[in-house]
Image 1 (cartoon, rainbow, N blue to C red):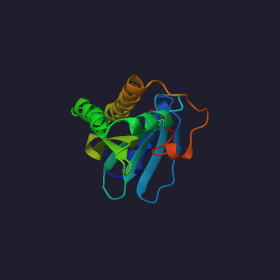
Image 2: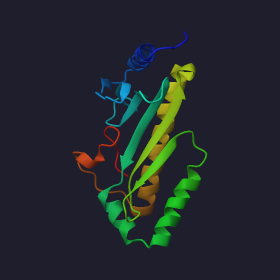
Image 3: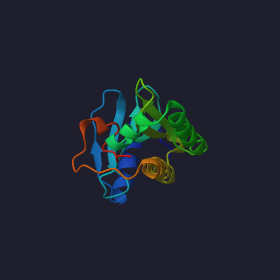
Length: 175
């Protein structure tokens, strides 16, 4: 079946996610033809977004991210600028050949605040395999960042309720 409309793409994506027992929620978004929030992995609190941006006809964008834990932020601030940049550089090198794109959002002092991950494909490549592969690649990239920060700085104390600033692309894990 050739996908030619936003409605066809959304319907098919929702069908596949529902068949695999994922929770799917519509998100109001004036910049998107459709914007879905999905639990991935299934039945977890982790969320990813599936968006068809109005600005990019026939593109499907899979998006998630992670806010850096407060304990890790404090340790980043205490690092020398050279050591901090070496840490970021190591992450960049290790993520160079992954399928997901990523963006490390820094504050004015060069401290990483959050990391966002995305996979993009177009309607001509929309298959169930591509959809779930993109969700998996984003999840693996998220787990890499969480593990990298935890290995470097220790496992942070997790709050039971996510902070509002942790909402970047749905409810995210803390690194």
